Length: 87
Image 1 (cartoon, rainbow, N blue to C red):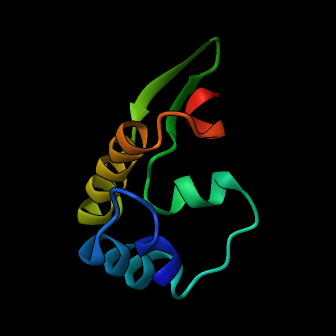
Image 2 (tube, rainbow, N blue to C red; image 1 turned 135 degrees about the horizontal axis):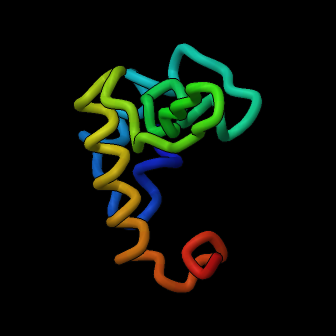
């Protein structure tokens, strides 16, 4: 939790929520597992001939999902020159 708090734009409440609700009890192998665990992945639709993306799923922990989206925007604001922001 101390590492999260050390980042600009992340306070104690956000760090605690991410640590206890998401990272504290799971191990992830890749980014797809992280996104899927809070339903930030896509929702595909495939009916034979037609394939399309339906957007982001709304299942999962809504509070955590909202906080992670807020933290992503704060990252862009407070870390504008970081490698991931430039990417």
